[in-house]
Length: 266
Image (cartoon, rainbow, N blue to C red):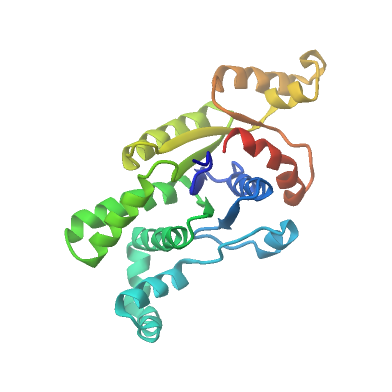
């Protein structure tokens, strides 16, 4: 059995490097001969960056995903397109954002079921979105209790619970507040993704400890603010996997430089 998962979800607070790491993971898996696609999930697609990286992408977003889902249920893409244009459905997605998350995740899982060789790397825009995505399916199951939606939710849960199907990576920075928030999120995600082989792992990004080790830099030669940062990291990181600080300019260069490091967290 392959050591790779079918679905990788990158989440965490804003500004911690989720998108760069999700794209780097996609490029790493591609370099290993895997059939893999990146999905930006519920956020503005960065198509110019995708092109620069020659990134394999599953380019679906909320509206098209909901239209596909409704069309499949009604067996009519025309009716689904008309329904999605109504004020009622536009308001519904604004009032119940978890509904959109669940439908989008459902379509992503459909892609995985259609192609058993496919792996998808999902770039969740923020920790709240990832948690809502998992919580919403359970909440809607309790609300509807029976019917087509519940059957779809049960199908999603069954797929995600299979061995080697899901790994969630919480990206954080090496400071006390960020690490505490990441640990709190891990507890909540662990409680909402129960299964025999479901892994939620915290990844520290932009580590100066790892950077100075790899570049054989003597701590004595560092300025005081970096010495302080390294001491803070030593007290926080522990055994948590850490990715080094990358001294490159531009997101494309950073992603290319960090790609080989994905081997440690795959």
